[in-house]
Length: 281
Image 1: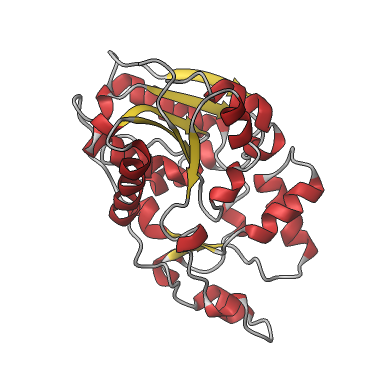
Image 2: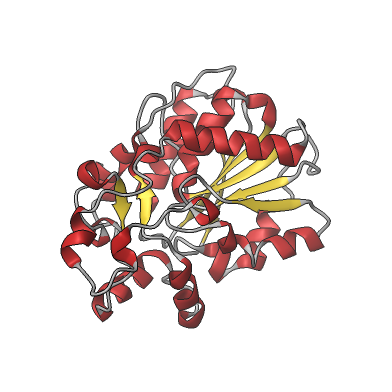
């Protein structure tokens, strides 16, 4: 398929469709239709816990309050993305670019409705193997030095979310947040982005699994854009996704493009990222 299908951009946990706002204009200027959407539990679908705006600040509530997005599952997220793709593409296949935790959502959609996905593009995203939850990769040796896990608050099994404390005034915590997500992003821009984050990522998206088949996900063309300086999804984990996919579906190998970037190239190098994505059909 030629590079004429509409591009659909999907953000990762805690972010929203806003994070693609520097990329989409480059893509559209190059003559490609493109739109960014919000993932379930995020953006316009976000529901913030009480502690986030409650005064005075209550660190105990940060650790224990059950998330209002605890009921959002991988099924819910995939159903929402499928409906968005159908609306945007009018039934024609689209090219989907998934960042980070949007990866398992794209995988589920491509498995269930491969006819709707012309090309699955994973930008430093979770691309779990058949029957494996994305969360399992956070416990693998390759992920041992990721900088996101130490930032998470409370027990996800109790709160139902992967939670960031975005209400804290702890300068050291906020610096570690910057280093985990935005290490090569201008600090002023990174501060603005941090202000737009939502605190809870639904753990259900990371716990769901998808059984992959040759005529489902295995039949869809895929590209993986690695981020070599990523401190959230470490390069070793990214490599594991690619090797597992290629071992399972050797007749449809993953195309790989390396970016010298942190976890957020949509902010640090939007023009370069757009130049790589725009020709993908």
